[in-house]
Amino acid sequence: MENKIVLITPPDKIFNQNRSTLLIYPSKTLKKEAQDILAESKTSQNIYMYEVEDGYEHDVDWLLSVAKFCETVVIDIDNCHKDIKMLASYLVSLPHTYWLTAEDTVCYNKLSPNRIYGLDTIEHLIGGTFEKQLETE
Image 1 (cartoon, rainbow, N blue to C red):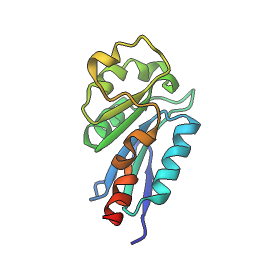
Image 2 (image 1 turned 135 degrees about the vertical axis):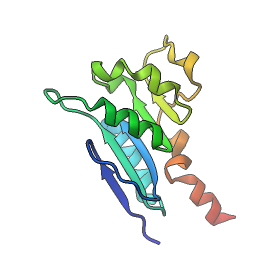
Image 3 (image 1 turned 90 degrees about the vertical axis):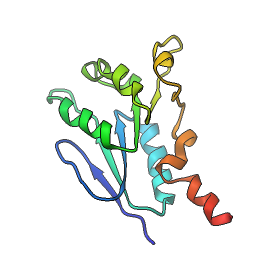
């Protein structure tokens, strides 16, 4: 079965049976990691991307609603626009959110143990190694 990746940005939403992942302000490195993982995936997936360019209005309602229904959320806090950083504590507190930051002294550790340093840690959540393990068993 060939995988089908659907990239979705505001204001769109898709209500199908695919696994959904939200990437919030991913760095170029994070995008490349996601691309590599998804290229190996055997399942169809929705990839929601939130990164608003300067000068454009933020769609906070879209972001919050998508963050609630996606199975996995990844937020790159250091890359976030200042308006979205104000929501970071709430987003980090969601149990299915994984977060990255280069800062050492952050209060996010008190809200969630889901700090990651790259997508390799959660590759199985976005279609990576878990499928490879099943094939070898």
